[in-house]
Image (cartoon, rainbow over all chains, first blue to last red; front, side, top):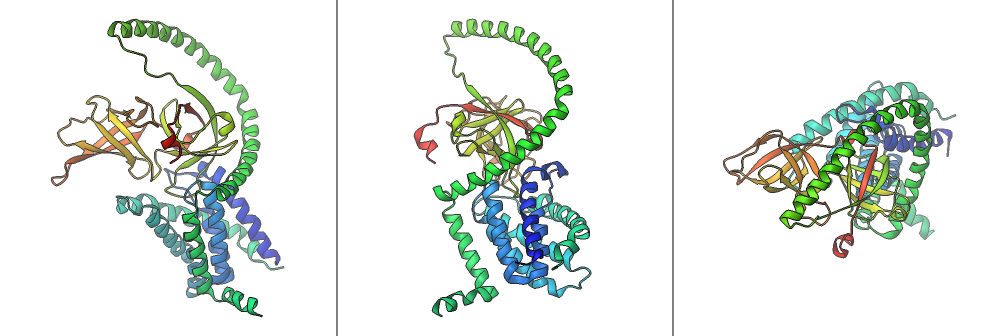
Length: 159
Length: 269
């Protein structure tokens, strides 16, 4: 395991703790950034589909265990997000690669997550789109840009 | 050689993805098994430790201000308590006159929120009290503002509360004035929807929505929220009533678990 992987591992663990304990203080209206998704996309952009989906699965399972929700649901959505993020990132220019991938990955993640979570229930998708998915996505993107700006290089460095 | 051939799929991204999807689906199917729950509770212990550091820090910081505030509150409660005592006595006399029994008296278990769900749509909180503190699955959870939710998971020292704004939460409810019964469920954060209220019922914004007491989980009369809006359509028998929760779930810190006897069939669900 090179140092970059080790750094990502530590950041994932920290993000998991912060997401469950401190992120509530960052809430605006009822929107919160998804730190795990941000780190997952950064990792997948750097290491591609195989490691992206592996990280997605592990992060998703850990998040499911702590959240008290259905075990496997976060794992499924984050696995697919990690895989897609690792694949599509190559389509974007390097300068805007992370932010576009984060948007696309976040969108796919939330769609899978809400679709499975609401299976068999009568829910207004309009509400889910405009009250949850889109605002959360923008908030996550803004926080993601800040994290990428300050920690991106440090996480990427292989030495 | 054969073993390495089996592991070759790890080098193929699509096969690896399918493997993880398969594992996720398996996890969803075995979500409630004891061993997986054991891992979940072990992880929550770590959160408990983190929370104890955070609590210690904020506790010391706020001690003086809190003390001052509590003194004032204590004085106010002392007066209120005196008035309440008079009212209870009066109530008891009136009940006796009406030949009614006092229906319930509950014990409360005080608990603190130590963590909350990190996923959207799932709205749960982790409490620092578990089975050893007397908490059992399906016990109702309240705070001073009203109904918070119910216990959906318990370990020795922690428990998980499913709050009212969770996608899967449903509570038997009643409109306070008309006494009409319905079911309160998720209405898109931060709202709740009261369903199955017939169109001929008069509903007013500001009317209280309380628990109906028909379920064996939630005692009767707990405040759920306030009607903010309602709408009707020509093709539906029922109106759609929008409810603002009484509890501010974002600022949830201290709660009480209502200690009730949960019937076997519900406790096992």
